[in-house]
Length: 620
View (cartoon, rainbow, N blue to C red):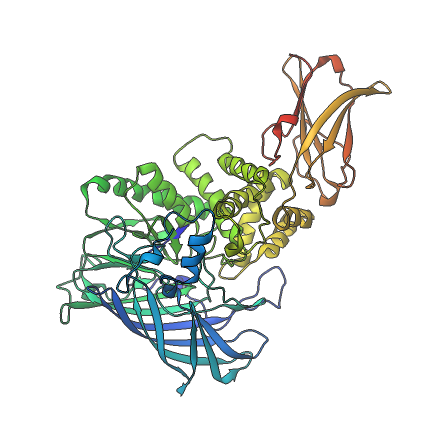
């Protein structure tokens, strides 16, 4: 789903994206009660590339911006999921349709192949604390409670083992990349208006605290690293990071210390390999685009072609969502597919060019939809995956001039298939609670994309596009939830959209409208329409005449309390209220004998689950 990588610029682009450390601006929507926690991470890590093990020291300054007093904190220890008998292992072996990348592979791992992450010597402001490891969660009771507005310093030692590549993280992936270091450190759990977010790592994605990272990684000097943040010591590192000024790398005992800083992010990831080629492409708005890929002849051409295409994606997302706020983005070969992280992605790279570009577009789009607009990916997975799918499909269509009338048509088809399957669950389902992996994927990616595409059908495409930009400007560097998006959409459009969010995401109600028949009432031709599904929608209805000319009718939904802007030749008729199952559309001045056909939603932008009853053919 997501993949990400690193960056390099010495000159401190930090200024352009640096946040004041403990102050959080409130959204422009007038919600003065919004708050979010803040962390500063300082980590020093030493990597043993022969044993795939590492040790580290973490100092974390945690600021409680909430109105509540905290007596404990929680950390995620994600690597503990990669052990036989873990929740991830058992869930993968018991679900009806396991992820093929996982299956029963965790159960077969040997002790030197598993993943683990253990913590010791936990202190709060110099006082020793008791910490209890519970699978992938570390529970830490504080020695002194943390009052609203207070900060505390938490320090700990950690040691980990990078598992054989199974899911997202791992060593020696299928394409031979040595280290995919994602979800690798003790990560503070998020405390927000819903409370602590301590879901175990079973399969899905993440939620993190906004903050600043200062990370030093010591590794054998023949490895090249790419990942989150800005490289602080390129002259010492060499490896082509500072071609003009770097001399011999300053290795100590055959190792180099790489120093990165990443301001205003909620995660830190990196990848490393001895055979990485590292290219820097100068992107739009002064953004350095970094590419790390294996030195293999069969993939070089595609990775070179990818670089200008990635810059076109950057320009597209800047224009249609909002300006990328950092000065670097890294595309790193690694992982097991594609996964987004702060300022970078890890993707598998031995693909046809179309696939390579497509996964890059998707993962790069996640920089906006989750790594700037940081929704909770466990609770509201359809927002980050769906919105990303929507905008990356549009970007691919524009950049490669695909000419698709509806770039998200496949998402519509996929969603409708799920809706008819009997396996759909509401989108409010926690990402780990779907009965089927396939249902999760379609609900999050496809139905989520349709939510955004169909919003244009409801409020008008231009208004929908303005909503996306306003959503970005209002909620960047924060944790928006579905209601936050809805309120922005209502403010921009002037519509009441509670019904849309409720029916689409909180239920499995479907859209199904039909044309029943035609009749004549007092000399006026009337088209009888019926709502068969439980979810209401406004309707665009096209009447085609025998000579090929058309008349368009617009039936607003009463509950919207508004009407979209339409062209002059579209006739707006009376609202249709949800509780009325039928509607009589009067065709004033239209001779029934001249009507060839009547069609609901001729552009097919409404996710009607039965399109066969959307057209009534009166003449052949």
